[in-house]
Amino acid sequence: MNAHQAYSGSRRHSWTRIDMVIALYQATLTSMEQLGQELAEGQVLPTTQMKLQRRLLGILAGLDLSAGDLPMRIAQLVRWALSQLRTPNPQVWRQVVKAFRTICEAYESIRQEAAEQELAS
Image (tube, rainbow, N blue to C red; front, side, top):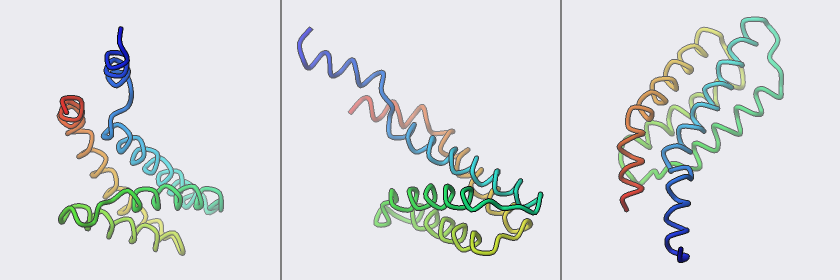
């Protein structure tokens, strides 16, 4: 097996970009749900807020804001979520979680097609 064949074979078993995006959004959603649970219990841990803030900033850093309307809308949602971290309100927080869950589901719905396109290029 030559080097190119080895590289091509390893690409088939590595993460695609869509897999990484979905993993980040799912981890963010998990952190959001944990914060929501802590809000309901009346005890929000600073470590939960910091972990969520890092994940939200990771999403924001990965957006190409020149790529159209969708990245701009996701950026607005991330900024809204970050603003809600300052003084989280359980009712508003449920709306934030619901919006992020919708985005996660949308990315998951295109996972196969996006992965195929990436591997074909």
